[in-house]
Figure 1 (cartoon, rainbow, N blue to C red):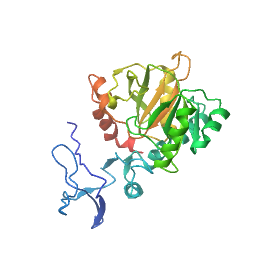
Figure 2 (cartoon, helix red, strand yellow):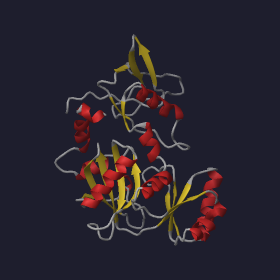
Figure 3 (cartoon, helix red, strand yellow):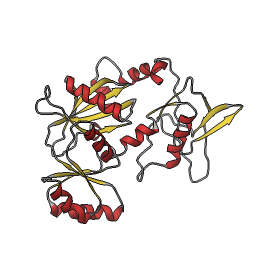
Figure 4 (cartoon, helix red, strand yellow):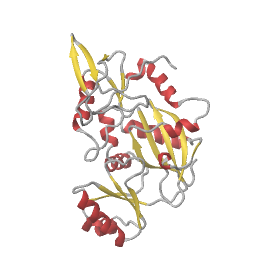
Length: 303
């Protein structure tokens, strides 16, 4: 609708080629539903026509890099880094993606820059649970989560006591040795706030209501959402977070303060590749996706 030509490229099977000093992206074909057609057992692989790109007119909106140790493939990451080094504008940058991939690092980064976060403690192994709780004056119930990202709220659980915490960590470590777990203070809320920050400005915000009988508020899991107006301090906090993680487009998740007008919200986490589906539904009168594309049609915003 905006006159911008869009190409879909799948990480799996993707490679970069060069001919006559021109750069081409090579990817599997896609079906009518927008899914990559991956190789089958019979060995047939169909590639789409190589896509000629150059840093002057090609913006790379990279999704699906995953999380190191879980779903990320190092070659996928390297390919994007190589394109960055060739002068391409990528959103997110590898640096931004890497920063946001660690909830623990972000927690420390935000704290050292005078932002409020729930008390968060790294947990190395199951027998470390008691020390971590005691030395940090944590009170049950507590949130147990992976530090290296989670997808749509998966990997976030509430634990009520040492009786449940210790065996849970023990089992997780058995299945995934050396996993980076976090214990986090549980702050009871009825909703949280997802703020979409684009190019250093708040573009939209939505209230995500906690699901009945759950602690999560992910729209992709079925939580109800609605548009909301942010306070000045919530706007200021969200923009500060986006700058700290060096993000072009980020989703900042906030827990509202009791007095939203006067007190800082808690910064729960920040996402380098936020989904747009939920926020598109509640921003009546405009398409967030179109507004993002309009922002980056201005080459000044590629810097």
